Image (cartoon, rainbow over all chains, first blue to last red):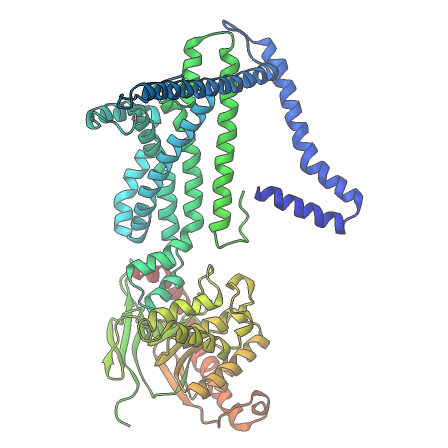
Amino acid sequence: MNKAIEFTTSLLTNIVTANPLDIAKGIFKSTTIPLAGIAVFLVLWQVTASQIDTSLGKFPGPSEVWKQTENLIDEHNEARKKEAAFYLRQEKRNKAKLEKNPDAKIKHRDYTGKETFIDQVWTSLYTVMVGFILASLIAIPIGIISGLSNTLYKAVNPIIQVLKPVSPLAWLPLVTIVVSAVYVTNDPMFEKSFLTSMLTVLLCCMWPTLINTAVGVVGVSKDLDNVSQVLRLNWWTHVRKIVLPSSIPMIFTGLRLSLGIAWMVLIAAEMLAQNPGLGKFIWDEFQNGSSNSLGRIMVAVIVIGFIGFILDRTMLGIQKTVSWDKSAVLR
Amino acid sequence: MNIPHLEITGASIEFPTPEGPFRALDNVNLKIDQGEFVSLIGHSGCGKSTVLNIVAGLYQATEGGILLDGKEVNEPGPERAVVFQNHSLFPWLTAYQNVELAVKQVFKGKKSSSEMKEWIEHNLSLVHMEHAMHKRPDEISGGMKQRVGIARALSMEPTIMLMDEPFGALDALTRAHLQDSLMDIHAELGNTVIMITHDVDEAVLLSDKIVMMTNGPAATIGEILHVELERPRDRVALADNHQYNQYRREVLSFLYEKMNTSKKEESNNLVQLQKQPDSKEQAA
């Protein structure tokens, strides 16, 4: 949205000041070239796809993927209609019951239809955000504290360095077993599959934020530190007024890296934990093995790519609003 | 005169290095009266900043110490406000907010919020920054940043203001403007000021007392020159003043004749000095 406004205003100022040829060039550069790139890619994809024969038919090209996209949206709309109809029927039935006998017990049942693709996208987004936010809430304070104390930094650093490169697939079995052992309740607030996926995301994505926060805190200028000492700021004010603002750029660099990792990890975690998100969608289509499956998986791949891109841009937007250093070039 | 306002007695400092302790300062003794403007001058690396940092409480003297109004100083505090060489403003705060941070800390519970606002604006207007007080440091010039740094130090109502080469990074014209502002402020408020400089003209123009430091290692006070020019001082009029030029000559001769007598010693010092930054880092 911001970008759109920026673009329009810059376009408007261009129109007022620049000559028409320059404007034409500007539009050409900013839209035509990326579009041409996409077009070439689509052609290459279509040509290559038609060469690949699989047990499930030809590898889907762009047109097949588009068809499947429409199918998935239609399925979603149909499911929504069914759901609405279900609730309507239930309401009617209950009304009729109450009219006959005002004291009758009424049952409210939830609709139990299969999740649609779009529901699964939302589940994925929800899971990744919960994992990412919890990871940030853990990583930023630890990063700040270990950045402030040289001793603690030295104590924590080797552990971080060893845990950081561990693959989500290695954590997952451990997390699964621990969750099923620890999370025992008759009235579960969360699905176990959700907890497993979310915790795996958390474990894998907290490290970049932690490390970058610590590095940012260590990098607080000695001069600003001296000012804080002269003012006799107490620990909390020092952290809030000096350490936090000056490490904000580094913290956000970490957060962006973390969110990227979180999104990548999530898909793998969902496949194995059977959390009803995009990962499970791909896994189910893979197991299903119909002639549509490959196309549907491709749709998921593209959606995953776009969501990852949007998540990164959103973080960038937040970083630009929060960061005090407006001169820094962020991309 | 009973007790001096600030008394530095036998202050020495050693920084640990892998080759054993490095003695940066040796037996510095200095007495400063209330309202005096004192300059510390010397070749770079001679330990001027170390003296200032000891007075500020940012460094601890290994031997000797500091008495301020008869009380020992061993930690930093706002009554010894520091104006840093590179302004040290918080880049994410406006000029006003930078001063506000200091004022809120020092006058918490002593001033109401409207009194604080007035006090912040008063200090910014002392340094002629009222027109740009809601701009952030990256939107104002180097001279303006240093003005805000001074306003922040003044706003703490310090008994002593410590200035570490405050105008070192500025061009000559801006520097002259700020020196005039500083003289006006000093005349109006009568604070005690210790300023580090390596500009001889600046030292003579501003100071009541010029403290000349010998070269390190184990730097100490070489000579103290009392400048008895009448205030207010005018830089243009003083250019032809015989007494002014006499003071200038004395400082110059200390720096370039007495301190440069032995070339060999100088080069030894340089070798030592190159080791000093490491040791400082370790100490910090």
